Amino acid sequence: MTDHTTQSSFVDKDKYLAFELNHASYSINISLVKEIMEYVEVDPIPMAPEFIIGAINLRGEVIPVFDLSLRLAKQPQEITNRTCIIIAECLFNEQQITIGLKVDMVTKVLDISAADIDKVPSIGGQFHSRFVLGLAKLPDKLMTILDISKILTLDDMKLIEDLNNAQLSENVEDGQDDDCGDDTNAEGTQCESDETEVTHE
Image (cartoon, rainbow, N blue to C red; front, side, top):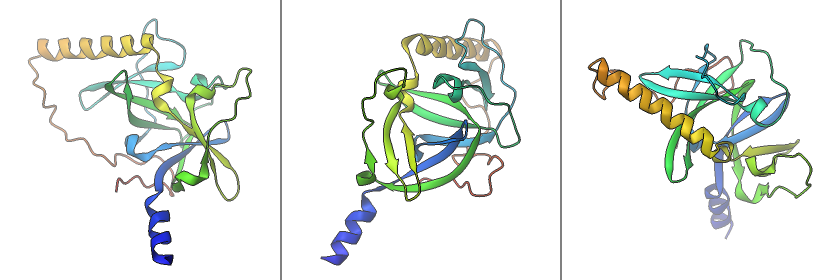
């Protein structure tokens, strides 16, 4: 019985990538994370909403970058040597979308049991609970788990499609094929955090 309980507890745990925004802790399921990279300058996108700060060209793929602080209606934070862009995948309207998420700092990978995740209480007001998947009960604090698929709107999707179409047209004009030459590294470049280790098991 003890062995069965221990095994069940282990299986029920999932890995989450923890990061900070405005001195508060958040996380997303690590299965959504493709890589973590140091912050780089992004190219502005005309007519994009304020929280989409631009786009980057990552090995031939144009990826829009969201400022998560602005998307969650918080104050933007200045860029430091710990600022990162999390490259993540999310499902929106049955389409797999790759986006970049600018965060203040990536901290660590956590094992969180499903039993330790509570639904968000309905408190009304301006709280953007639709972005939140749940609240994880850690030994020393609560951590907000974000549902990154909810940060996209139909207008954002149209913008991403336009970016991808523009990149596709540019590749065709330049005579490039679909193989950009570099293989995608699932672990990616680590930004400046000694604790951060992103692995998929």
